[in-house]
Length: 105
Image (cartoon, rainbow, N blue to C red; front, side, top):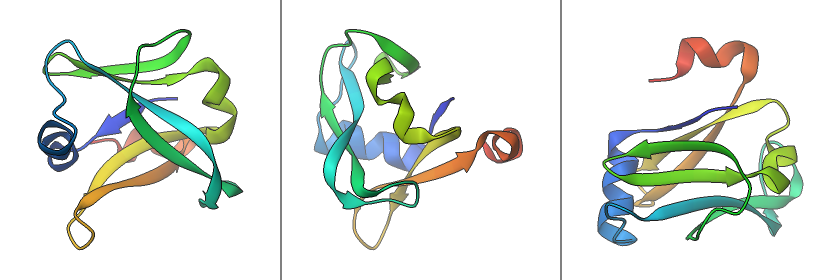
């Protein structure tokens, strides 16, 4: 599993979450909502310290991660975080592992 974040989404994290060098941002599974992967669950994000990070990626000193206990949610998919211009917030794409190599930017 990988985490890919577009430049537009990275800018959102900087502006809206004030993510700065040394910060850590967690993508976590929350009960409620829905996603293309699991009905009744959705992905959330918060500034948080990693305990057992399974996947991490760093951009400009900010580390984005998923904890080991939340990997089940991705069900063999990579996470691509984009920016939804209309909603003015991050959007999540789930790319099947076999297709991910061709779609990661």
